[in-house]
Image (cartoon, rainbow, N blue to C red):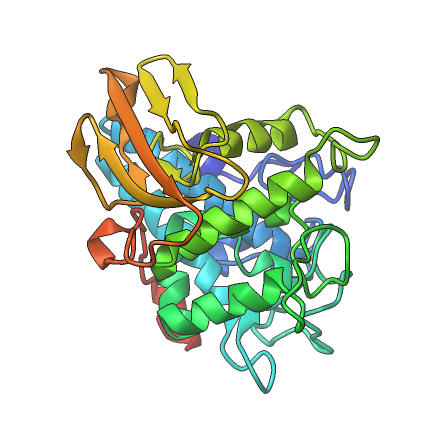
Length: 334
């Protein structure tokens, strides 16, 4: 907690910046005072750092809850909502985005959502989805299920309907790099789990294959190959600091990981959609499972199909957990 609440000398220094800022929480003073990291800071792009620190605070809040530090947990959970202070609903004439903000509260000029130079190794269009712990909050700000789903569709597909998943123009996804790796799973918060299933499978097929380009980009200490392993199993740890898993469709017919058993006898390139799922023998329409598999046996039996079951995972109660907290700063900046 000390490192998360007391700015260190290095937090207040630009030593090593922009790429290797040495502070554990660059410009932590701004995080505490402004409730966002501005473009006049010690970080490597203030908007990127804001999203990074929001995820870090969320993960710490979950640890605090586990340790029984309820006051610290509540405070950190509220801080994880600071990402909303950079959401500008009028960032463009057509749509809202996460936008860089100046220290005086004004928005950064010359905003282009498709620019690859306003965020770290990515664009505003790609970073928009980097709030995996608050998918419902993002859904609400964007305008609801259909708007969120349509924006994800246009992020993963060109106007002719073709997939675009890897190092194209900055308005599209690049699932070979960290800012985009959670985005295929964000459909689940709009009740479109079948689109997550399709997008994850397309990413596996196009980016991970038996060719000289079969491993996209840098593995970055195993993070990218871990994405592939989880995705191939049809599970993904989307929420930082929590063991809940969001679900897609497994590539393997059978897998055993600790207490978790996965059985999908009819999986194939075509059979990528979840028609039905049984969890420990009981039918389930939830697009996620909780952490029970850590301490007790959990078995997932999939019935897969070549056509999507659009109702599976669609109901509000069947979507992954979301932790949306309105902060005083958000109210002030609306």
